[in-house]
Amino acid sequence: MLRTAATRRIGPALTRYRSQFNSQAAFKFTEPPNPKWTYGDGASSQWLDPTIPRKSFDFSKLSSKDTYTLLTSAIVPRPIAFVSTLSADGVPNLAPFSYFSMVGHIPPLVSVSFSLSQKRSKHSRENIVATGQFTVNIISEAFAEAANCTAAEAPADVDEWILSGLTMTPSRFVNPACVRESAVSLECELYFLKDLSPPDQPDLITTTLAVGLIKTAHVHESVLDAEGSAVDVGKLRPISRLGGTTYARLLEGFDLERTSWKAARPAYETILASTTSKGSPAESS
Picture (cartoon, rainbow, N blue to C red):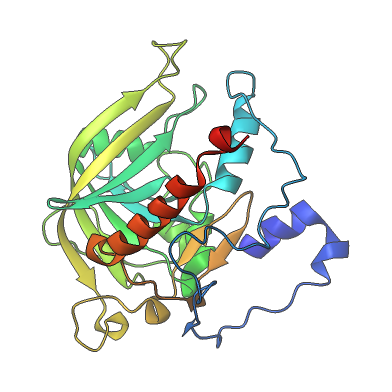
């Protein structure tokens, strides 16, 4: 379904040049972008031609569609929460949301936000408000199309589990099921909920932010690292959202050690002394 939607969008002429999906491609580590970088070097010289101007976007003058297009193409890649909920009367719902992030680890919290419409309610949001429970399941490449199809704005009584062909597996601490095909599932209880409105329309709720307290995590042992304490991203093969109908996969990574102030301080003081001795631009002119 991902391919079908993209095909409709770009047309057959461009679709001909797409390569087939390589399910055997493996995650690998590379050197960092600038392995010889040192303190004070800034960005690579090849980045951002200074002769090209910046274009500014005033969100007070943009339509909601244009705002969505810009932000979802700029804030990338976005992880996807595959959210399983139950209505107050026990009807299951399953849907993906890319307005999703980890909030913190003490306590363990995740956030999911829902964009609302005056025309129709967001079933996942309504279910979380009613029951205070949900599960977040991480989407891997193997069921990308199945997860994507659950984004359809179907009536509340439609069972997305049937539509997708995915499988329920019971949770331990909450009532909504986990997705058996997901290698990582998080059982969550509602910790915080906030309805949000535009500054100039305080009575119009356009977004709901839900923060969930993670009660337990279920991780398929096949995606754990050698120590068994962390997830190996090369084994998890997660997908993420970009702009439009485009999704991304994760195939390369690089390590950068976290800088300590003890290590950075001598370089900082040297750079500062050099800058001071040369004088500021205003003093030099």
